[in-house]
Image (cartoon, rainbow, N blue to C red; front, side, top):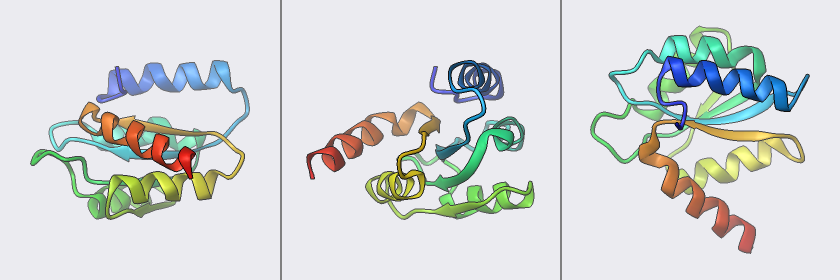
Length: 122
């Protein structure tokens, strides 16, 4: 379901733990302002190597810099990106050969898939 709320994020975390035991991830996240972002980040933090945040194309989206600050306030490492393609490139660079995942609002999923496809072409 895109892990766009705390319930979905809880299910995603359980799945990631089952499918990738012991792994840590670089997460690309964008979240809408009406969601409990702090709870979502608390669920992800134990699995996170780091976060890249981006503002989804919606007026309801929490700005990337604000998301990064929320993550850091909870003890995580995060950096905002200025666009979805830049965020995807940065996540790939940070993850190297390790796992990465894009989570949060469904509003950015199409652009994330396009950016991944474009990056794979180059």
